[in-house]
Length: 87
Image (cartoon, rainbow, N blue to C red):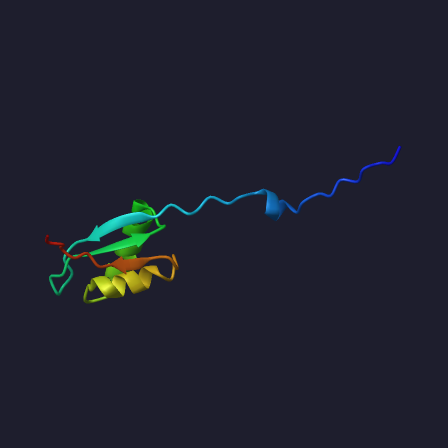
């Protein structure tokens, strides 16, 4: 009777990674009095921690610069533009 050989799949092929959770944040007014929104995989606690560090090292607070700063820690962080729709 012939023996059937089993081919093992690599571990990477077996395990399906879960997509990273995205969190959406409203960034309050910066020094230019703009309100923006951003999305990131960083948790609220992590964003607060990086915000405190950012405020200590920067004289002026700009939302776009803060999002660029967060990109060092999370490449998926980006600013979201929200516009009104009328119909």
